[in-house]
Image (cartoon, rainbow, N blue to C red; front, side):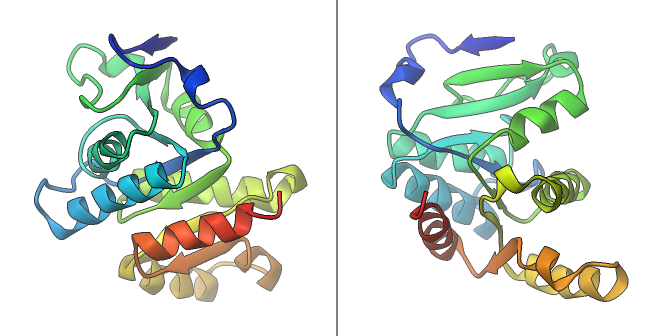
Length: 193
């Protein structure tokens, strides 16, 4: 179910905008460096004209949504119907897309033009793994998957060392230092389309 939050501009205001899904932890605390990094990323994505999609809740999702709204972007939150009573979307979400279950929620997030992963936990890892696997198998999805920060820089070599991953599969993912690098990677990757 899609619900437009009262007072939000219509999606048609961004007819040619590409949608970037941002994955990140709900446990990132306001005023932490991770929160501020996520907020800066949201502002940068807005300035570049992207529609921003997150899981719609708190932590990094809220920070990205806040930054994107500050920059004037349309913000989509893909939430879970079973959470409706106890966990409303963050106040920066303009369009809520309510999913029936976790699988539908991840599908809604993955259905985007590009993906960025910030620091996260098991949920973020699952979103990255599924997106990466879809990129591996679906030629039409060859879009950027960008992982941001030191945690991903440390984890990716471990995954490569302990899983069976081809060099071609490894090239489907780009790891960058921070939000500005993530934006640059997205713009560069999408420029040829």
